[in-house]
Length: 76
Image (cartoon, rainbow, N blue to C red; front, side, top):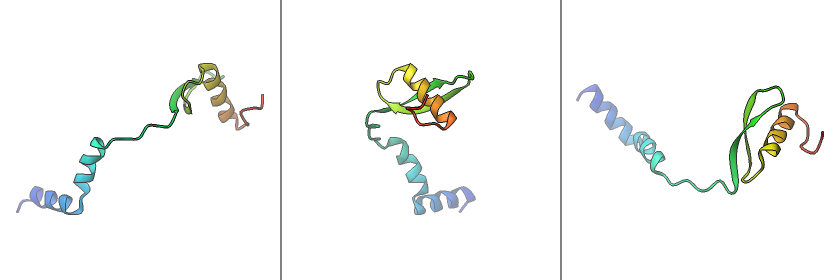
């Protein structure tokens, strides 16, 4: 038995190779009304944040700025 055959047999016996193949075919549940959005911070840098779907871009930018500062969203 070659090294390649031995590796294939070991991978299949543990299920590791099958899990990797099935992971891409698996149906994923919806994100329940959230989405990842890009935000521009006051210093000009950008961040990606998770917000409720339909949030305006101004609100996304504001929430990201609060996260960066470590302040509650209602603080100004």
